[in-house]
Structure formats: C-alpha cells, structure tokens
Image (tube, rainbow, N blue to C red; front, side, top):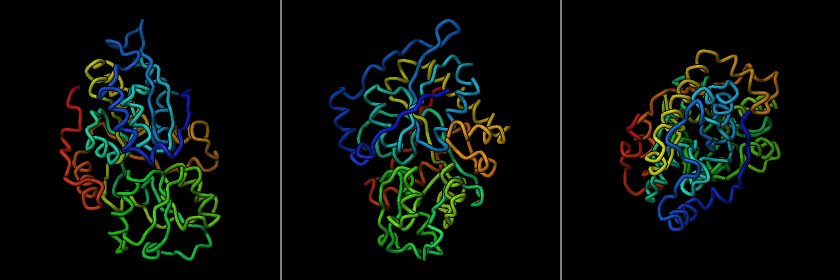
Length: 332
C-alpha cells in the first residue's frame, strides 16, 4: 500500500520564491538520491512520487495496490500533497524523483527557468459535463443558484495560480461571469466542504472523490469547470527534472510503462477502481459506485498545454505564450 504525507499551504502560496531558492541552493538541479541505471528483477528501484490528494494520488495508490508498479520493478512511496505547486520544489531539491502536478504549475515553473519535463500524462476529462471529475459546489441553502451568481463571490481552490484557477476562470468566462469580481481563497480539498457548509466561502472548486463526498453531504453542484473550460481538457502531468531523466532513463521508462498500464487497467475495470477508493481515499463505501472517474490516457495532450498556456497569458500568470513542445520529454 502506498504511504502518504501532506504539506502546508504556505509552501504552495510562495511557489515562486521557493522554486528560485531551490535552484540557487542546488545549482539548478541536484543529483537525484538513489538514482540507478535501471530497475531489474534483482535490483528494483525505490522512488518517491508526489501527487495531489484526491483522484490523482488515488491513481498511483491503485497502481501500487494492484502490483503494477512492482511488476515494473519500482518500489513507489506515494506522498500526497495539497497541490501540484507544492510538489515541484521537492523535485528540484531531489526529495522526490517524480511528481504528479498539473499543466499550469509545470508551465509556470518552466517560465522561471526550472529544468522540468513532463514524462507522462495524468488526469484529463472527456466532453460530457456529467462525467467531469471536478465541480464547483455550494451549500444546500446557498442563494447562489447559477454560475452567474458567483460574480463578486469567494471561491475556494486548492492552490492559487494552478490549473484550478485557470480552468475556473475559463469556465466562468464561458458562462458570462466577470472573473475580475471573484475572490479566490486557498484551501486544501478536505477543508472545502466544511468551509462551504459554514459559509466561510461562497463556493469551492473540488475534485473527486471530494465531489461525491460533497454531493452525499447535501451540497449542490453548480458548475463542471474542467469540461466547461475546454472539452477533453488535459489536466494532470507527471514530471521529473531533466537531470534525473538523463541519470535514470530506465526508471523513467519503467514509470511511463507502469502509469500507462494503470491507466489501461482503470479504463477496463472502472468498478474495481471505484471499489478500492474507500481504502485508498477514505471514501464512504456507499458513495464509491457514483464517483466520476477521470480519463487517464497514454499521451500528453499538447493541445491542452497550449490552451492553458494561452489562458495563463490572458490571466496574467505568464507574460508570453510558452513553448509547449519544449516542456514534454520526447524520449521513450
């Protein structure tokens, strides 16, 4: 079973400062601890993989539980964290070898000069809002009844300046909402439902299984932000530093193969994945059958990278459109 830990939100809020300090103190990158030529039957490789709590971390946890990563001779320690932005400094410092993040956080990190490359896709969505694994929720007694009512309201996101912020703004714009009049509040996913219920925030952007938990507690679903920002949006990524990729190409290949195999297995056995969620995501077993499962593919969606990069420029997160092809590792 994968092991887990968490980091505080302060780390995510100070991403730019932390990343620059990490580069300065490490000379750009560090030698990844424990890097080996490659995993083998006699010498499996231990790696630490960070991922975002909720559906992203559950993906890795399920693959570990099924023995898929072990089949590829990888001994994975999963470190679940509040957001992808908090994972990136750990990659640069060498504390983690591979990190699950989101496209926006990786593009933002690359814009500061950090030598990260996307090695595999993470979560994505289809085209049907009813199957989106994200949602904006409001309390059952909230006066907010439609997306347009969110103008001027406070909305919780897991971290600022990440894919949640960008997709939320794009979805609200698509619904005619003045995004300049909303207030974003940073909260961990597990804290969002209580904050909504206590009216500490007007709404919250949550992902599965927190969407299903919120619905089970009586919260109302107002918006499906990933799909409503862009159909078939690619959201998540798995990344590593360029130095670790050079040092351990066989480990990278083994992770890519294990992630792709896990993606295929979940696609072919969705009920088995849902049945595992109570144990790996602390979900009420009665709610597991109704969880919306993300789409996990085997190719990085460059079109989604380009879409999100353009939106980052529109929302002031980047000055210039990023070179999206440069951020994707082109090796095997």
